[in-house]
Each structure stands twice: as C-alpha cells, then as structure tokens.
Amino acid sequence: MKAKYIYTLLLGFIALMTVSCEDRLDIAQNGNLGGMEDYYQTDDEALAASASMYASWRSAFYNWWFLKNLLADDVWCGGGARGDNTEMEAINEYTFGTDNGFIEDVYSSLYTIIYKANLIIDNMSDDTDVKARAIAEAKFFRGWAHFELVTLYGTAPVVNHLLSSSEYRQANSTAEALWAQVESDFSDAISANALPSKSSASDTETGIRVTKEVAKAYLGKAYLFQGKYTDAATTLDEVINTGLYSLYDGDYDQLLHASTNNCCEAMLECQMRNDAENIWNFFSMWCIMQGWRSSNMSYSTEAQSYLATGTYGFMNPREDLYEAFVEMEGADGYRLNQTMRTYEQMEEVGVSLMEGYSLIDNEGYFMWKNRALLADCVYNFSAFQVLQYVNYRVMRYAEVLLLAAEAHVQGGGSTDKALEYINTIRTRAQLSSLTSVTLDDVKKEKRLELCLESVRFQDLVRWGDAETALASQGKEIPSLQNDATSGIQVTITNTNTTYGFKTKHNLLPIPLKELEVNPNMSQNEGW
Image 1 (cartoon, one colour):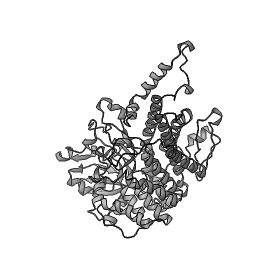
Image 2 (cartoon, helix red, strand yellow):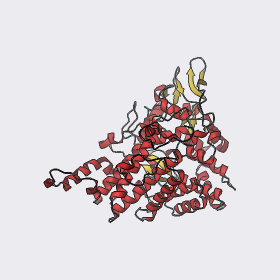
Image 3 (cartoon, rainbow, N blue to C red):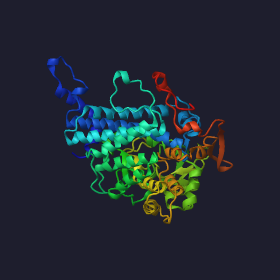
Image 4 (cartoon, one colour):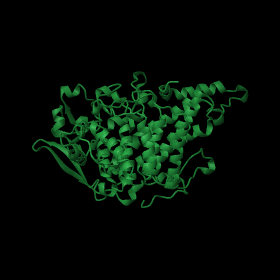
C-alpha cells in the first residue's frame, strides 16, 4: 500500500472507523457497538489508528514550534503591538509562570500523542505487515513524545501503556526513567524491521511516514543528549552511511517552502497537501503568525507578484543572530542572505515600512527563509494567510550531520568524520572548509544552519550555555519605526524588571493545571 494512503486517511479516518463499526455491528446485541477490544483487528483499522496518531502529532506542532523557538535567542516575539499575544511575549522574555497556556498545551499534547500510540501498541497484534508497521510507528512517536517531555519538563511521568482508572494520577518520574523509555521505544521501532527505508535519496514518497533511518536518527540524538557519545556517533553514522538522505542542492532559500516538501533532505515532516477540494482540513495559523506585519508594509508590484501578504509579524530575527552570521560569513554571506534580510535589503526587493507605522519587537531584520510565498498557497487569502501547504519541518538531514559531528567531537571519535560532516554543511553554504573542528565550531554552525527550526533552546540547556546566552532576554523591547521626521529608526519602547533565563528555567514548570488535578505530582525545583 502506498505511503500516501495514510494521509488520505487523515481526512477520512473518522468515516472509515464508522464504516468499520457498522460492519461489525451485531444487531442481536441490541445495538452494542463494541469496545476497544473489538477494534484494531484489521489492516484498515491499523491505518485509521495510525492516521489518528499522525493527526494528533501534527496538531501539536503549532504550540510546540512556537514554545521552543520563543524560548531561544534567535527571535523576538513580535506581533501587531505590545500585548498582541501576552503568553508568547512571556515565553520569549522569561516572565512566564506555571499557568502559561503554551507550556500547558505542549505538555498535554505530548500525552495525547502517547495515548494514541498506546492504543495501537496495547491493542494490536503484529500479524500483518501493515499492523506491524503501525506498531513500530507508534513506538517511534511514543519515544518522540517522551524525548520532548524529558528535555523540556524533566520529571514528567512515563506512560508506557494504557492506564487503568487506578493509575490516572501518576507521580513524577525521573530523567533516568524517561530516557530509558525513549531509548527502548526507538530501539524497538528499529528492531521490529517493520519500518521501511527509502529506496534512494530522491524517493519522495516513502519518507512521508516514519522510516527506519528516522528512528535511528532520533535514537542517536537521544544518546547524544545523554552524553553517550560513542553510541550516538555509531548510530548516526549508520544513518549517514546509507546514502538515503542528502542535503538539498537547489536554492537554499526554498528549504522551508512547499517546493521542497519531502525532498532528499527531509527526515521528519508533518504533511500538508495542495488539495483545493479539502482546503479547510489544512487551515493553519502557523503560517499567518510568522512573517512580516504585512498590514504595516508597502509592497511594490514586483514584490506582490511572488510574496504573499496577510501575515502578522511574529518571530522577528534578532540582531544578535545577524551578527553571528556576519561573524562567520560576512555581510554578503550566501546562507545569511537566504536566511534573513536587513531593512535596507527589504527595500531593495520592494518591501518597506509605511510612514507613521512601527513594528514591535523588531531591530530592523526580517526572516527570509520562511517568508510567505504565493507559490506556497493552496489559496491566496491575501489578508488572512492560513491556507498554505508547506510541510512542518521537524528534522532535516542537516541536523543529523551536525549531531554526528558533535558526537565525534565530544566523544573523541573520528576527527575526519566530524570534519566531513560539518564541511558538507559549509560547502552548501558556500563557505571554505575547516581544517579542524571543535565543539564551538559545531555550536556556531548549528545555530546558523537550523535557526528557527526548534532545536536551539534544548541545545543551549544541555550545553550549559542557556544562563549566559539568555540572561538578558526580555530586558528591553525594541521597535522599528518609520517616523515622518526621523525616518527609519530602532528605539526601545518597553522594559521589563523581571526577565531572562534563570537556573529554574533548565526545566519548564509542570503545568499548574496538572498539579491541581493530581495530588501525586510535585513541581519542578524553583517554580
């Protein structure tokens, strides 16, 4: 069965389950529709259950993505004005408490994914290839969710089976137990030999769902985060040595656009579809929240011919990120200019801030690699850009190369391999090759290559760099203004007395709501 079939099911799995129930309906039982034990029996039910799990994972992406990128030091929160989204501002400025909605939603969404996975693992036998693959995918996603729980919340409960009513109020777990579950699930997903591998790097279909190599990449990532550098290097090398993934060699600035959905560099992506007939099934606020505050901007005729308007101006790049690019590449760096632009460069392409208007949380820099394009639109909602079909990038092959390079550097492995991996990234960025590599080289390369791709915060925490890098985050809030007299200028419009990363932020708080309903849970230290 083709991999794409499961995403047709994302639109129709409810109907499919209804039909399945009708097929099993026993009128003699006075309308009893059966229970969980009557489902998860056929290949079609396995596909429907997998589709439901994938759908929950995709639904979790929005808050997961914003939370992790707002916590890092690459972007300002932004928006239409101060207070446009107070919960996002609080995350970005480190003024949040235990009741922050994004922190709560990510926590609960991860457990929803775990629940959907446990439904499959606990109720399904592996007596067909389709069901065996569904179980292996469920193991992967249960491991993925626990990975996020341990690296963000630290002491969240391990849930590795369907809970009985007496088990609902789980106590805190430990990092050790969570990591053990992560390793176990990823390893089981791999050893089941039920996950396919791509046929080649150019295979754009098989990778729509989880592959064996993706599970290995995440197992290697889990080893690296725990300091198991030899295991990490060995596992990540295996992924690289397959040759089934490669860096995209087309226009670099297309990496986060629909034209490169499921390309050779895609490891793990939430799938979207260019499907006008089912357009509202792919409604997403993720696209509209990013980008530039287009209502405050003027677009030339040429700019309007390829840029989509109707975005809200959140997630503006920081000057510090620009300076990090310039330090490595110079102001004319190829990767820099495909990733972000200065205000002067924006004017050159026909986009400018209208006189009398301002952009909150903006230092005169604009993200470019995720700019809204007309080519990404299923339908161009020019004032409300929510109908694009860009896949949500969760892991790119570039990350695998950098994880492997770090594993070799940190663990005293192969210097030659570390150099090969990091120089592969640098060659595409049109930079000269390094002759030696240090951990600091990996850190710098990773920040630039993967900025705004949901990895920076957890890296800063595990490296022990967060308290320094994020110490002043949120102290002063800049604004880009186009004043009739002074022209374009950056001013400080707001200040906070409470701001910045503190020791307690090494772990996010267990959400207040969880503590209110579960007396067996205790709060993380400092909260």
